[in-house]
Image (cartoon, rainbow, N blue to C red):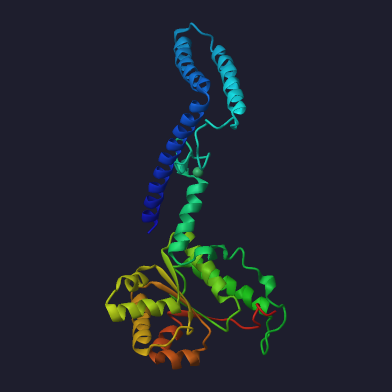
Length: 321
Ligand SMILES: [Zn+2]
């Protein structure tokens, strides 16, 4: 996936440089039509550079003479541009990114990705794995203070303390994967307690560590499973199997189509566990509800402590606090 994105971006950068060249030429033609003197001066400047360099090499011209004469010419060109209503840099080469001149890379001799390419790359990567604009949701930006610092009913800890622990747990899992203590994680609890945020943070951390992840809502999963069931289009379902880590959000919110959801979900979890690949599932359902809705077979896969870490979110809906 990463290489495909890079190739795609490289193609776009090539296109961009071609468009830059066309724009350079268009501007030159436009200016020349309005003010032929500028074109003439630019030609002269060009020949002067060549002649000057040759002169310096031959020892006929002093090295500091050329810059001085260039200055005079540049000033004159700038004046003319100004007189015709253009900015002084109107005939400078056009770039979208001045740092890498739209090559996407900076540095000599060791080239590294320019910031513009890096951010385009990650934006596209996040988009493709289903994170999109949620890429801002990271462990670093996870704000504990939005959780009430008062005791969760019937528990010896406050909601904020609980969330601090849970964040730690999720972060450790994402940092250690695939060597985490279990291959799967089940995030349980009512909505509005931060499950999805932490899932996004996990996805992003895994991506940054170079893993290939896929984030998908259970609703969307049903769609993919249904397509596979009715029309035999397995492509997308296969891609769910291929991701190193699959993050399935909000299981239980999708309409239940027993012969599709349950069979496909079981296959998915089972195959992924067999292949040793990680699956993270969030759900508003508790264990009893999971069992009732998805059968014992699926529930037992998710409650096997050797395979799956259960994380239980508790407290008040922070959207209402
Ligand atoms: Zn750049």
